Image (tube, rainbow, N blue to C red; front, side):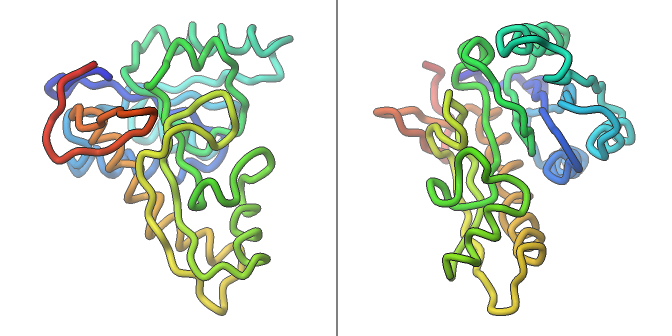
Length: 221
């Protein structure tokens, strides 16, 4: 894991839609709550997304790399890697990024990709659980508690070592839309910036395949 870089720990954010978590990261940076981390680029998997508008408004470099433009996963991975090489990020954040990443990309950024998911993984995660679907699943199952998870990315959907989770209470009147909004506000927008800062400050410890956020800085592996 890269060490502290005195305000020069570069973070690229990959998005597919509205960019609400991107907005949370932008706000945290503006309020100087990301420590040494700095957003360096936004890459969208589709054109004309609100996330791109948010990036532009914040003065962040942005690009579109669409899966439909490439004949294979390997070709798409190569295009993403080439695009990101311009910015040389220390960390890649998947913030509502709905396009699959292949092994070439994941290997290149090993231990340097995190994802935010709107449930307490491993519950209501995996292929197909995106958008309102995790929240609908929570309500259908009758759960009293849900939340959000930040985890490191591996080859499987919504898998990989969990970095941080935050619970959110389910209310009797909840709809998927109401629950989604509360999980964003009470969990996602809090733990994602916190995790980015912890990684940038070199406060993530890997041990026996698990990860922990420490209060004190740890030495790089």
